[in-house]
Amino acid sequence: MDLNTITAVSHPQTRSELPVWTPGDAWLAGGTWLFSEPQAHLTRLIDLTDLKWPALVATDSHLSIAATCTISQLDALACPPDWLAAPLISRCCRAFLASFKIWKTATVGGNLCMSLPAGPMISLTSALEGVCTIWKADGGEQRVPVAEFVTGNQRNRLSPGDLLRQIDIPLQALKRRCAFRQISLAPVGRSAALLIGSLDSKGTLKLTVTASTIRPIQISFAKQPDADALRAAVVEEITDDLYHTDIHGKPLWRKHMTLRLAEEIRAELLGTTPP
Image (cartoon, rainbow, N blue to C red; front, side, top):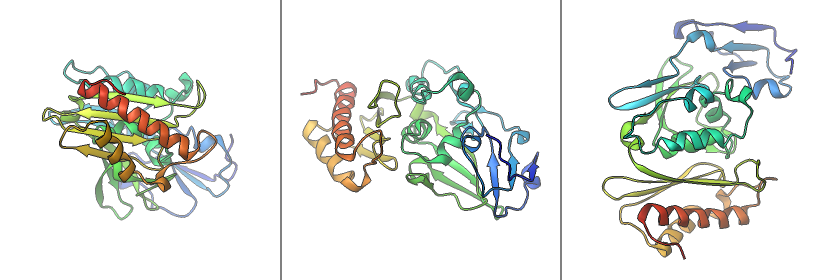
């Protein structure tokens, strides 16, 4: 869609060249949502592509994902054999249910910043203990766990002029056994519940609930839970007001599916048979 209120497009190449943020500004990365509907309140786009951030950088301690990394770039990442959680990357990328054109344009950072409950990059990076680096509008920097970055349906920790720079995934999280469950009302519908469980070397089970809730919810179990303990923890931690509601699923159904999928994950990771 043409944005006919835009009067200027800025192309900074370094952080120091980022223009002073003013009302009517918008960051432009992939732009798949930005150009999908009228944006009458906008007058200037600040194009991030000329910053040329490396899409993916693996170090001895973490995997760094640039906010401008596209879904296709992330999906194409060749992972070492000891990254047991690597299949989550492909499964979360495919939870977009998007065309190849969207895959080559939409960005990981854009998905986080939209902060929709069904954002699969939110699911992936929060489950893998990702930490956001935010360039503050005042020139400072802030690091926030992804699970705390998203605060509600289309709400997050960004203030006007703040810019999400990258998400860092610790390698230890990528080396854990994981289990993935996702469900939609329709075969190609938006996720109504997307749960990821992980099991570390100490036997600690961590459950990350997204899509069914308005923000990511994480529950850790230092002691391996049985089915009753898992259900009790989910019911206690996820109160009814945290379940999302829209045409893709009502809260009561989302709650039911969350409990069901959580038990399937527990059974898979702990090697038990669900009731």
